[in-house]
Image 1 (spheres, rainbow, N blue to C red):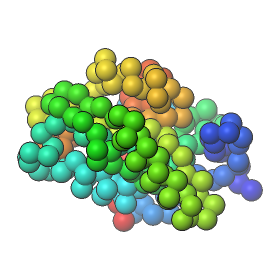
Image 2: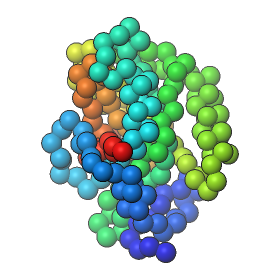
Image 3: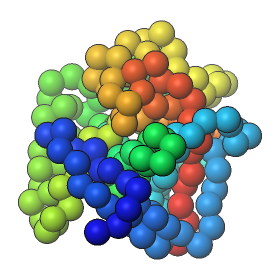
Image 4: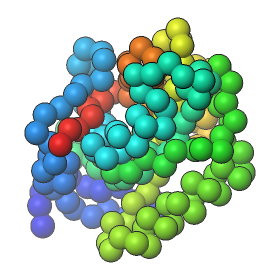
Length: 198
């Protein structure tokens, strides 16, 4: 057993695990979110495969009709609490796009059918993978066009209602400007965000 990290689980049980062996094993370089490294202990790491899935879904770096409206999905993985400094570390292993969500230039809705589709995908992932026990650790969505990346009032309501635990995250991306930021907890405080590359 390794020391120093507790893994959050939906059941509120803790497993001791060394996060660095999981997240940093695949990392050769980091791409920090397009902000300065901010003064916070909390961090979100997005695996290269989850990054590619998100970027493909939202048309990262493109200006096309499908990404002229808000898009989003779920962040799937594990969150950890470092006992030495009480920091929260999220590791996104999978992203599940909400392909049936209804979006406009300033609004995104996950209806019951969209939630069911995403939950069915999560169940299938967990059934197909031995001992991964992946869970929802947050969500992502876009602010397209000229919009900046921030948590709007509507976004904050979503965070507080659906992703309010200290170990849950949100990322907001602008696919046209190729800019993104990460946030965590009930109050969606900005945190450090890293996209891992192979």
